[in-house]
Each structure stands twice: as C-alpha cells, then as structure tokens.
Image (cartoon, rainbow, N blue to C red; front, side, top):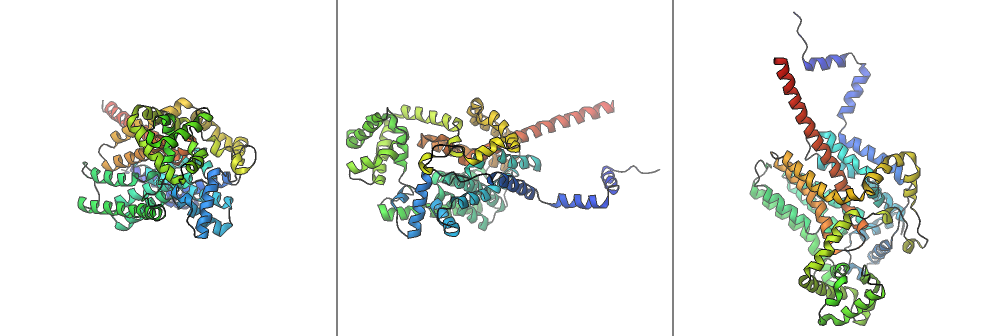
Length: 502
C-alpha cells in the first residue's frame, strides 16, 4: 500500500514541480532579512518625495545657525544659555563639509536618517510580536505620516530629537536583553546625544532604568543575568548618560555661575503663567508690571511674549536674558504653588491642543520671517497634492486622521486602550509587556512635558513622537486583530474536529 505523503512531503512535492530557477529565486528571496526590504521600500519612497522637496527654513533655524557660527569661531555665545549644543554642532559639521548655510545638505542628511526609521520601528515592534508581518507593517506605516516625513525638510532640532529618542529606546531594549556592558554603554551614549540635541527627555532615560530594574521582579521576566548584575549595568547606563548632562551643565556654570543644562525654563513657562502674571508678588513688581503692560498692549495675548519683549524688560532691570529667565522661574513657581487650579486649567487645555492642532504651518507653509517672502506653500506640499501616486497615499490619511479632529482627540485614549490590551494579551510574557509600556510611556512623557511647560506651537512640539504613536497605533491594532483571528481559528478547528468525530 502506498504511503500517503505527510504535509511536509506535500510541500516539497509541490516545489519539485516548479521550475528550478523559480525555486532558487524563492530561496534567495526568503533568505533576505526583512529589514532589507523595509530599508529598500523606505529609501525608494524617501527619494520619490525628497527629490520634489526643498528646505523649509524657520526663524529658529537662524538661531541654530548663529550658534553653529559661534562654534566655528570658537567663542562662547549667550544663546547657549538657552540651547544645548547638539543641533548647532550638527549644522556646523554639515556646513563645514557641504558649504556654509547649505540647508539642502541638512535636509538630505535628515532624510537619509529618516530612511532608517521604519527599520528602527520594526526592531522595536519585533520585541512584542512573535510574527514578522505586524512589525513590518507597523514599521512601514511610518511612511504614511506625511508630517513626520515633512519634518525631515525643516532645519530644526525636532526631527533629530525624535529620531535619537527612538534610536535610544531601541538601543536600550536590545542592550537590556543582551546582558552586554558594551551595548548598554552604547545605549547611554545615544541617550546622551539625544539630550545634547534637545533636553526634553532628560528625565525619561533614568525612568527607563528604574522601570527595567523594578520589572525584574515580575513573573516570567527572564534575562541572561542576575538582578544584581542588572542593577549594576543600569546604574552604569544612568551614570554615563548623566556625564553628558553634568558635562554641559558645567560649561553653562563656567559662563553663568548656574549649574544647569539650560536656563530657558523660566522663559518658556511664561506661556502658562502669563495669564496670571498680575498675581506675582511685589518682590518682582517691576518685571511683573512691565510684563502685564506689554501683554495688555497685545490685547491680552501672552504667547511667546518673552521672546518678543524680554529684551526690553531685561534692559529695564539691568539683566541678561538668561538672568531674567531665572527671575521668571521664581515667579512661575510662586504662581503655580499659589494658583494650582489656574495652572491645571492651562495644562489640560494644552494637553488637548497638542494632540489636535495641525502641523501645516511647519511642513506645508513657508515662513515669511525666515524666507523674506510672502507666505506660500512648500514644494513638497504642492507635490503631495498634485502627484497622483502621492495623493492616492496621503489624501485618505488627511481625511481620516489629520483633519479628523474627533479622532485626534481620542488618540491618547486609544493609545491607553491598545496598550492595556497588548499588556493583557502578553500577560505571560513580562518582557513584551515592558516593551509596550516603554513605547506608551515615551510618547506620553513627551506630550505631557510640553503640555506642562509650553503653551504655544503645539503642531511643532508634538512632531518628535508623532511617527512613533502613529506607527504604534497601527502595529497594536494589527496585533490585536491577529490575536482575535487566532482565537477564532482555534475555536473553529475545535468545532470542526468535534463535528467530524460525530
């Protein structure tokens, strides 16, 4: 009696009837790592878009360029009291190679880094998904976010800030999983570079370390090392990162007498406390009265008022701008402590607006102050609207996501929901739970920090983590659907077997 072929022999018998060249090509295709396909797709799409773009220069670009010139001259510049040196150093390096103020070179450099973002996202999502396709689609979905792609054309620190925090997260998780000192120190260096570019995430990296150490007590949290060695490595990670913070703070201290990485916080917080500046104590009467007077001249508008008239108040009080910022810091602390409800109302409004307000002015519109020309549409935005293929990809996203305010308002709720569901799905895999919580925490940390500190340019300040939440939401949704389909298939199989048995 002829033996029936098994499932495995069936597969091979099918392949044996295929042309030899096809099977060789098939084997070659399956041997190529998934990240190579991702990188190829991302590179092709970036080239397709960026070749029809030009740099979109903004006023703050000029500030960064002045600091790059200060680095070139080897001189201390007062602007460094407000800004960390990372992005000016990037501009200085690019300009030194490609020509001074060559913003096209900056755009191309940022786009080349942007090509790798889907790969980083894939590496991140693969820590959660045991199947490749949800991670692949989650990574490639980054290319559907035209605002994150458009940010690559803008010579501002927001793009590199978002890129390096994503790289820092991937590096930290892989270093944590590997148990290797070299990888952990490398992850700390990436975090330090992120700090030097923009100190927004300064407190997030130590939070990662503490969270990872506490997670080691979770059931089924398996690493290749003991808890003691893990604690030592995490302490080393924090220490190396703090060297970047303390090193730059020392530079600021040498020139100002204040040991801090940035002296801008007091000025930035006036975007919140400016609404109640008249309630400041008499100790700050001159600063308070001048601020309120300037605010009333503008019909009560306090947004970015420090940037507009800070110099006038500084001259009247015989202070530098950074000294005035420190004085406003004292005023801010008083107002927040004595009027917490008014501050909380400001923060809750900021939290809602940072999720909902558009980023069009940054990626779609030229800035008249920086360009010296009337406001117009950027070349990239015109291309996205007129090219058939680009419009086919981005018009649905525009309608369903970016112009859908009810959806945008629900995004933080949806992120919490899918995070909770993924944590429950992976309730027996503590590592996957940790990765999911890290992604969710990184997104919300950034949004909350800016909601608490700033009350302006929400469409700009939300962009560093927009690509991360956009892709994570898609990945999480696909993973949940995969889980539900898997349950349905298993139940259908049980019913089928039971029916056949009858």
